[in-house]
Length: 455
Image (cartoon, rainbow, N blue to C red; front, side, top):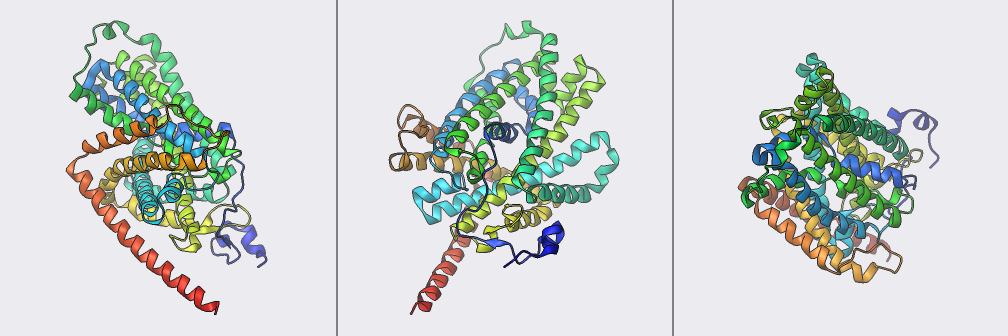
């Protein structure tokens, strides 16, 4: 069907065009290069949490808190290596969902895709509310208009993603640069004001305190896994994705360690602060330092939300390609080459969740679902490596050692989950199983009809 002129010219009308393509195979375009993959990875890991987490970690370990980030960073790189090798095996959309689909098939893949979706949904809701709080630092009058600010922001961010991955990745890259400039200013100015003598008398923390501090640091380093989802839009993904995700993760981890070192070195009392970086910056830059960090928090949060609105719809798109969700979600816009219906659907689902504060409590699902995703991906690597690996593909050393370590690491952190986490995760899995059953039944019915038509 030829594209309607009005639909081509007007974004609003294009939402309702009947000329958009519903596909059963990849029809996205490859425009994202290596540098952008690195920027996406950094943006995925360094979100709003970096502006508050230093206080939480310092509360447990004090001036020894950089040790927690160092250990958490090493643990995170074990997980990153697994995704790097998996990313070198495929050039299709889906990330962890795709790996589970190839390794385990239907039900497990659906559950990982479902948990992936829930994690992004609850994260977007929490970040949208955090964004209002950060903006309120400069414009207190926006706080009573929380619902309107969230709705307008999400619609603008969704439109950016709707208009093409080139636009959205350029915006994310620009926001990442602004974020890094703010953090770099904090590090390179603050390092001259660090009281280095306080680090000379550090006592190695107890194992219980160290574990308590490492957990939130580990969760802060998550976000790298989403970078594997839009592989179908990466240039030479089997090379660029492994190198990009490793490079970006290493840079982000180093920044976290430096930020924590400077923050506690400048102000050992940040443990009691709700805005630790802003408080520390005000000590060596003055009031403008606090404003600089607060502005960085706004840009950082916006970048993270836009990235989620880039990634999450493509999970729905990948599941639709595998016929586990309605085929309409695999719709590709003929001009912008984006999964348009999936972007609209995810945004419309996210809006009420973000606006209703009662749903923010579901943010606990994010950590649980990510651990499940990591375990599934590490096991998938053990299964897929002998089948898909070639001489030219990226391969981590040590045979099964790294994937096995990743599995054990995630199982350990699952044991630290609270009863509330397990209940929320269990309910999410049960709902996912029900949805899978409904989807499988409809698929069987559809195949039966198609077979009947052939006779």
